[in-house]
Structures are given as structure tokens and as C-alpha cells.
Length: 400
Image (cartoon, rainbow, N blue to C red; front, top):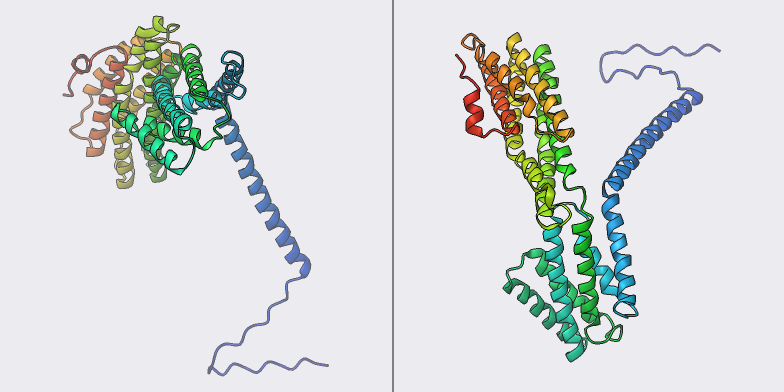
């Protein structure tokens, strides 16, 4: 039989839906299979990346976690053998709390937490021994412990630990230990943590140097990216330079924390006092590196403006950025080799001399700002060689 022809469209009403060939089931299933495979592959990559990040995070804290575990075990062992307590619970707890899971300001944190734990356990033990355990005892003990900590001028961490530990002592069964045994256990745990923080510090000398070298390396890489973005005029590349420059703030924060910890440890640790001058020199790098990164961010913003406006860039400007990046990389290598970058001083002065001779009168505003920021970075790098800010400014000639 012949198929009935479709009547012609008269113009009134919607157009008829054209005939569409049905999609074969095999093609649809194949499409769904490919899509599921693509999703599973992406999920697998994301999961692998997550596991790698977790592994890096674990490795970065491995030494500290090991210290805390050893301190907890040592507190329990010495509490039983030295103090004769059957369950020296607070010796392990106090050691873990005092060491904490961070690298910054370990000595001050150990002392602060130790005082809070010591005060809280002492007040709690007194209340358990004299008044027993109950709701009103918890209320009064926490109030007194936190009030005494505040009266002593304690900071938030110490005050909180005093209140928490007094509540923990009272809520535990009074018969776990007799008298002031819990207080003695807490004192033992705090002492163990303090000894570990002083005798087994977390690389206080080398970490600030490595952090400072990493900051310089990242600054050099950002300058290389700025150089490439200026040469190509690529707006997306310029935006990436600005994002990268802003991200350096986190690195500076890590450097500041490491430097503060190093200065504190060499001040108190008997094993590290010979490194005091060396540590102070490294800590003095934080301020000029902070200024350098601020100048780098301003330079990156002007690179973005230049790319969006399509401004021509002088080859001398690009050459200057290249020189500054080279010098920053050299300074990073010197710090990694445990030397202040004093050998970079002549190179910095030479780059400053060349920059002062650039004819900036015929250049755009973006070019002039980039030159100015690059010269400011050179002054910051001169400070890294041991000069004061005033001396570094004098060594860099003014622009003609």
C-alpha cells in the first residue's frame, strides 16, 4: 500500500513537526556508556588528586604527629612508673594539648596551654576532693578556674583550657585517682611537651630560609609570567599574572610564622642558642619581602591594565622585568645555600643604573608605572643583601 501524502501547510497554525528518524537503541546506549565512562574517569582523577593532597598534608605534619604520639605514650609510661598512678590519663592528654597540631609559636603555646591545663586540673581536683562531683560543683569550678586565668592576664587559649580541664576533672569518676593525682599527671604531661618543644624543634633554622627562598622563586616566576603577558598582550595571561601575584600573600604568612617560631626557639632552647644571630638575620628578611610582594602586586595590576588597553610595551621595560626576575632567582638560590644574597648587590645596582637611563617621557603611563615598581623591587632586593632601606635607596640612581 502507498503512504497517504501529508497535506500542504495552509499558513494558519503552527508548522507541522517534520518527520525525525528514530534513534537506534544501540546508538543511545553507546552514548550513555561513553558519558558514564567520562564521568567515572573525571571522578577517578578528582579522587586521585584528593588523595595526593591528603598525602602531602600528612607528610607535612608527620614529624609533629610523631612527637605528639611519643609524648602521649611517654606521659602514660612515666605517670605509671615515676608517679605510681594506675591510669595517668591527664599526663597523655596534657602532652597532646600542649604540643598542638601546628608549627607556629610552639614555645609560647606550650607554656600558655600548660598553665591553662595546670590551673584547670588543680581547681577541679580541689573541688572533687572537698565538695565531690555535681552540677553546682562544675559550675563553680569552671567559673573560678577561668576567672583566675583572666586575673593572671591570660589570653583566650589559656582561659579556655582552664575552664575545659576543670570541667573534665569533675565529670570523671572521683575514684579514678585519689587526691591531687590528676593535677600531678597534668603537670608531668606539660613538662614532657615543653622538653620536646625545646629539644626536638621542628626545623626552626632551615624552615624560614626555605620559606624565604620559595617566596623569591615564586616572585621570579610571576615576573616571568608578567614579561610573557606584556610581550603577547594576552588579556587572560595578564589576569593570571595578577591572580598569581595575589596568591603570594599566603606564602608570606607562612614565612612570618616560621620566622617567629625560629626566633622564639633559639631564644629559649639551649641546643639552638648558637644559631641566634643567624636566625635573626633570616627573620629580618620578612619586612623587605613583604614590601617586595606588595610592589609585585601593583606591577601585576598595571600589566593587566596595559593588556586591556592594548598599549605598546617598550622592549626596555620587558628587558628590565627579565633582569629583576633573574636577580630574584639568584637570591633564592643563595638563601637555599644558607647564604644571605650579598653577592647579588652588584647585579641589582647595575640593573638600577640601566633602568634610570630609560627614556620614560615617550612611554605610556602603564610602562612608567611598571618601571617604577620594578625599581622598587630592586630596592627591596638590596635590603635582602643586608642594607637598610635608606642605603638601598641611595644606591639606586634617580631616573633622568
